[in-house]
Image (tube, rainbow, N blue to C red):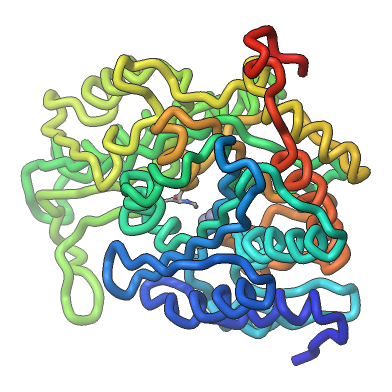
Length: 425
Ligand SMILES: CSCC[C@H](NC=O)C(=O)O
Ligand SMILES: [Zn+2]
Ligand SMILES: [Zn+2]
């Protein structure tokens, strides 16, 4: 395993080498690492365990004007599992190859961001910068499994109320081009299981209404819908986050034996599971109707149930309006971000809807503006994929981008509001 002489890169590697993959993330080790970094930066720190064993580290860089709302830089410490034998380099080795690519699970999603925040603060402190607004950093567990014991608990807590947060930054996605991406909303996860029942019978007999036939008709219908949505993206008419995605993630049917399945019996039940993602602006009712009438109609002996996510984690507010972070002049943080990225010689693309889910939804649900942003340009999108990597030069560039953003955010004073007149931005 190659390491780098640059202490900035070796700190990144140390964080990546802590195995925080589900189902047994080493949260204590990750918390200890973050706390030791925080100490070296003289940041205030506290470790919260809303659920025992699921450490959440909260750091503070106090601002000089405590009456101003604070800036929260959020990142999750957990990562998704990796199939070790399918990687070119072990996923927790943080191997640095001759191109300068650092290979590790979490190198993009999103340990890079968590530690880039810290490195940016290190540089700002060294330059003598003093924040007006307090800057908080939250390192939260369990994002990859829904965030219920992490960001959700934090957002609901009294501790959080005490932070007086005004703006949240959370994760975005890598960009294969030179343009960084930023996200103002995200799709709503909906996990759906459809189940068909039918008459069992001999494997040699042709008859109507078998469970398998009933399920296959539904799968065909789902597949047509999926293709139509995907075509909109392929034709460039819609962005990835603006269509409903439906992907089949499991099939369950048959009569098992110790070595396989009974081959000459047609089963009486068959199930399929789908990961569906619904844009906040989509017509949720017509989707529900489609599920009930086309994908799981009682006329075909079908039922459906929702998995962990139906509408509990909604992207709609209480009145049913989509929860979006404004990207116009009503939200000064957006313009500040654009400007700060530009100042650090980066380019920012048009605001997008995040195609999957992030912890940002828990903060947006409170009515706070939250922007999804991970500064990785010229980088293939490899989150949750094999051989996830980030180039060290992109990583270093990202630190400068955050330096610029944190400086702008922590210095921002809304003179317009103080004077009772319009915002000057
Ligand atoms: C829906 S809760 C799980 C959150 C997860 N987040 C990132 O991949 C996702 O599947 O989008
Ligand atoms: Zn993530
Ligand atoms: Zn993820």
